[in-house]
Length: 502
Image 1: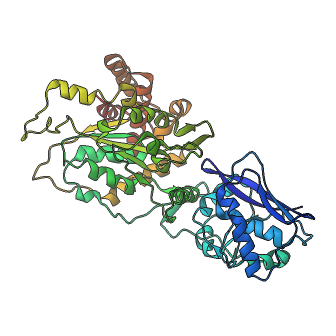
Image 2 (image 1 turned 180 degrees about the vertical axis):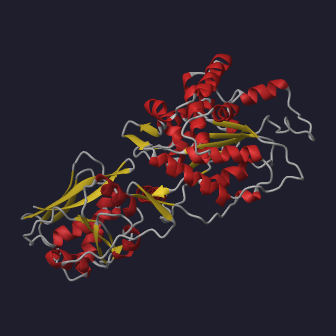
């Protein structure tokens, strides 16, 4: 029996699959066992054609290919090359079990690129289960970004056969690339950022309170709700927030590229966080992921480490808004189906925007509101208190004024966010301030005596819940960091209280 390794998806993570073969005497046949999908069963014809096209005699034996473990459903065309090599190299005595082989075969034996290889290999690298892999030559450029794996690029089936016949003398084709962006290092970890601002806060005239709230939100990864009349700049601020978010480590950049590949997009490998903005008519499955046989990732998962923006927040279905409470609290999402149960990370910054009333003119000094009190109350009641408690900062946008001017650029705001990021990392804080645990709040969110007194008065006067108290403390911690203060002062806590939803 011969064996090489490959992989398939189990949820959004890779599962190692051992491809085994036996060629025995008997009536000639070719079978693939081990819960293989239709795409893998079709590979039998591609393998036959590729071997015959390259002057290999298809052995007149009983050929059995087993994909182990047999209780995991396998799918994908990446198994073609593994199967073909095991048949062609049946005579080889060397142990090939530590080789991972990926590639789709053409009928002429050419090995084709597959965009799904990147997330598979990155997941295997994160699991530290792979050291060397044979991959399509065309994929080397993007795969070379994955560290700690030796990649051997091959263009044809014949190249792959020659490589394994002389693998003791083979040299890997790839060297891990360096990311060419501005960076700084803290505790041996490099953090990268993009200083090209495609959309700049200079375009936002006025709205000083909203821009201050956006800065605090970006620095601490605090969930943000913008409320205001149509056209006052809510979406503009949300779109520009992406460019001033904290820098990314090399591992986080690779994770972002993995999400691009899962969405069938070409990975960019840029230190720019994702921005997902589903329409309010989106279904629950499209937002959270799902599927009857294989649970696919949704917008919430694709927004991991980036921004999830809900425009026209009250128009989203009640089911979507209430289901969003789990990832907002736990930073992960669970999909449970009869055939599969999947959990994946969803650590994102939630940004939302809404009008003050159905017609949008409630706060306008120039336009008359056409809504009655019942309409306004019904509109606002679409957002439950448990959902709103998971939003850290709520801001009512100002009226648009002809005298409004630009005041701060994205570059200036980003520099402040970077300084806060450095400060947070140097004090030993591993997560963003908005994601601190209860124990970490006690450790890092230290209030002075005046701030404690103000918080006690606020708890009694506003009947604050435990969750609301913790969020106020975390927002105050970020405000203190922006002021380069080790302790949360009274002014910081008062500003944090001003962002509380009334």
